[in-house]
Length: 233
Image (tube, rainbow, N blue to C red; front, side, top):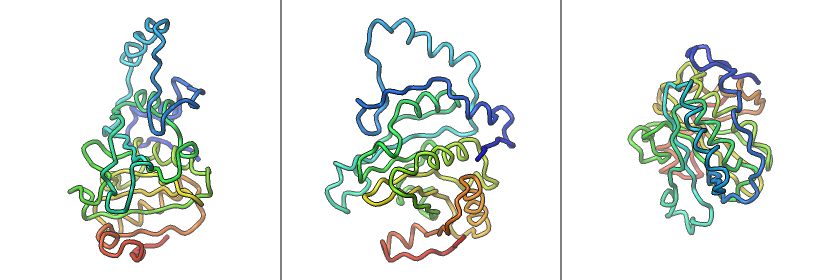
């Protein structure tokens, strides 16, 4: 799958896929945490990194925030949302990669963890004013098979690849016992044309062949797992 930026020439496919700093060692990281090199011997090199990134940054159309929901902090369903906390906000291609390369990917997260990426100032909660009237498309993956689809989803969002990009609130990957799920949240659930367009494009970006469904947040709040898909692709 190739993610191309046709709407914002200042953020090209090459920019989005050019990983400026590959970090291999993630074994000692806490779940969802950003790698922090405290070695004083590297302080000189570290001090040069921000200056290098600042020379020719590639700004994104929107700023985005990563959020992490720690599985160990969830004691019961009533506590949902209490443990969610923002990790980092980024607004350039370079900032995205510096964060992405230093956090654990879905396959390395503990069962029960939720990792979000939402437009800045939108909280990944049903109660958020921007999300309240929205809904979500959901894709399911086999255990430890969502890393690449998660990355492609992020690139499509921050690269403004969706025709109805203004409808996008953000995305979340849920790590569970038997599978992993990625959900794409949108603003106006009742706008069927926009939601169907987003769902079709998302499937194309990820080359996903299974059927996906769209659930209204309002139905999910009232019916929980009894909520039914309003749109299906």
